Structures are given as C-alpha cells and as structure tokens.
Image (cartoon, rainbow, N blue to C red; front, top):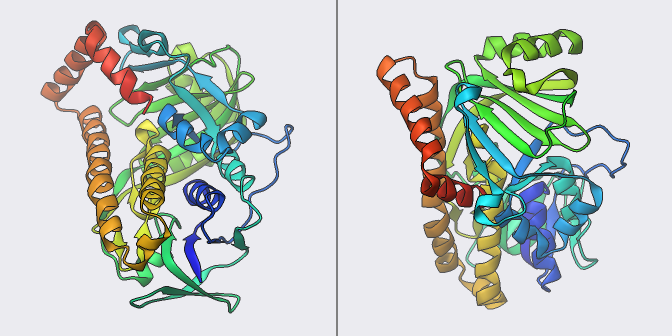
Length: 383
C-alpha cells in the first residue's frame, strides 16, 4: 500500500513525487516515458516556460532547481509589453530590488531535474499507463497496462489536459478551443537580448520573444489555425524571413532552427478531487499560454498540496476529503482568476472595435506612466 501514487511524471507530477518521497512518504510514480538525459550539445527544447521566483522556491525544496542551474537556463530582468515598440511599457526587476523577474527554462530540463531528485525509496513504474481506476472507503486501486495493480491512500493525477484519470473518475470540465493556434520557433539571434522578454499585441494575436542562453531565443506567434499551419509548413529559411517581416524590428536578424505549432484550449475541472483522487496542473486546468503562466499555476498546485499533506501527516490519508476540499478552496478560484484574466487580455487585444482599441492604448499609456502600477505588476510577475 502506497501513501501516494502520482500518475504523470512531467514537470508538476515529478516535482510532487520527488519532494514527498524525500519527506519519507511511500510514493509511487506512473509515467509512460522517461526524460532524455541532458547533454550540453543538445539543441534547445521547443517547449519552454517562464519560471517565476515563486516556482523557483518550490523547486529548490527538493533540489530540482539546483539541478536546473547545473544544466542551462536564461534569467530575464525586463518584461516589455506593447502594440507599437515606441509605446512600450517596461517592467524591470531593479524596480523591486530583485536580480531577475524569472527564468526561461526548457520544459524537458525542468522535468529531468525533478527526476534526478528521486530518492531510492520512490517506486517508479515506467513505461506504464493507467487503464482502470477503482476507489473504495480505504484506498484507490490503479490497474496498469503491464498488469500491475497499485493500491494507494491517495492518487494524484498529473497526467495532463487529456487526463485519463480524470476521465476514468467521471470528473466534468468546462472549457473551449480558441480560434487560434500557436507557432513556436527556436531561433538564433543576431543581437544579444538575453535579459528581456517581450510581447507585442496585435489584432491577429500576440507575438512574443523569450530569451534562451547564447544569443538564442524562442519566438511565439499566435494567429488563426490555417495561418499557423501554413507557417509551420515553411522551410526554416522561409520562416525566418516571414518572422522578421512580421515581428518588430528590435528583434534583428534571426535564423530559425526548428518550429512546431499546437492548438489552444481552455479547460477547467468542475471539481479538483473525487474521493481519493486529486487533480493538479493541466489535469485540473489548461490555460491560454499567452503570459506563460501554465507551469507556474501547476507548481503552485503542487506546493500547496504538498504543504497541506506535510502539515497533517500520513494520518490524514485515512479521511483525506477535508484536506482535498481545502486544497480546492484555495487553488480553484486563483486558477480561475488567472485563466479569466488571460482571456480578457486575449479578447481585448484581438478586438477590432475602435473603442476597445482606444481603451487598450490608453491602458498601456497609463501603465507606462504609473510607477506604482508598474511596481505591482512587476511583483506579480515574480509570482
């Protein structure tokens, strides 16, 4: 009998498994595929995240952040937002006496760093997938595709937006697909601009630059799905030219190395728990990636759930419903607020109505002139 079984060994699930196993809990982890070992010569992963200081503090508790810094990452000290570059609003870490606002890190390296912290006591079932879930008064039973049956006091579903466990438990969701896709390109940059991340708002969708080490970067282009598919089908040379024509001139010359695209969706679970099953990360909420907050919301879920479990101890797993209700009470409204804020930004900056256009331009001007507002936004950006 395990105290906890974590299903999903991605960034969020692996961070929970590493931390709780280090604290002496009996932990199992079920995952379909191990992360690839790191080599400095490897190209950067196409999927990257803007990791806030709050998320960094959570990862430091298990040693995962120290492992990330031993691989590669890129701190950013400035955050810019604009429709036209000449009217840019800048948020600077120096304004709140911080050395940086956060770090851009490849998702694969965040996952790998967490895996490197697994103690020997953690039981890993990999490669394996869950095929059945049964819950009773005392435990939850998971059947795996290799025939194993795991008994646990609590099951933590960290298996993504298409969560198998959420579906097996019959837990409902609310959400929709956006009328946009997202193109992500790994590029080499002519200009050194590794201390800043910026986002340009256009009526066809935002365009963003996220810095990576060594004059590299990640460019993000939101647009209609047909447009994004057309861009993704281009050769690297043709896509480089298209991006330099569409992005602001401050980007400079670029050379696309690789690119991909994916559709966008919003999803929010109606409940975060069902008996002895609890949802974390994308299994509970999938957010528009415009501000790069998805992984930070997931790490905030992980940190709170682990904090509550540690405060109460293993005995709480006899009747975990009150603890899970407390977890949901704190995390569900915060996640909903962030999701709704991103939707408001998305709708506001994509609107072609003249009044909305005037209001958003006025908002950017006021934000640029208000030292207090800039400081508040800058603090929020750090988590």
